[in-house]
Image 1 (spheres, rainbow over the protein chains, first blue to last red):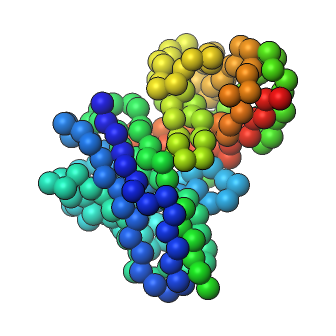
Image 2 (image 1 turned 60 degrees about the vertical axis):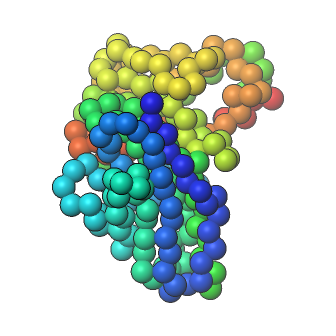
Image 3 (image 1 turned 90 degrees about the vertical axis):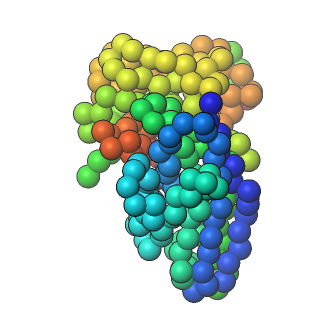
Length: 113
Length: 111
């Protein structure tokens, strides 16, 4: 079975500073990887996904993530954050060809003006 | 614009009541999911369905059942609500590119 670890439950960052949200997964087989964002009082929406191909994945709102198979990581990055990026971010993994998605516990990103 | 709708944003029920949470998607997706979201625990899969009348248990199915009579509608049923089922419930449907589309959620309080 797969699992996902988001080590940081809360990350405060100054506006216009860079940010990295960490995600590690465990699986013995090939995986698909996802980052979702949840703005206050809303459902989740997809930021980006890795299914295959280039290990550097670009998503919406200036976010990107890099799949590192040897370190089983899929960290999310943004070079300059804005107040509007305040939200909770979830990393998720599914096994290749499997319907089920396993989510991490989430990282709350707070932008300090 | 793709859309997943849930019947209620907020719901308050009493212990022992039967509770129905409805979810409708307009994208003709085959796969639909019910999750519950609790602080510090992330999202946990309750049930999912990969076709009409087909369902599979997720990670925490105890105390829940589901119904999918039409492709666009997936219902979550709490047979006898308990206080430990107070939570945020999220429905999602999935496209062929493995992206899940979420509804706005139903915050259920059981008193």
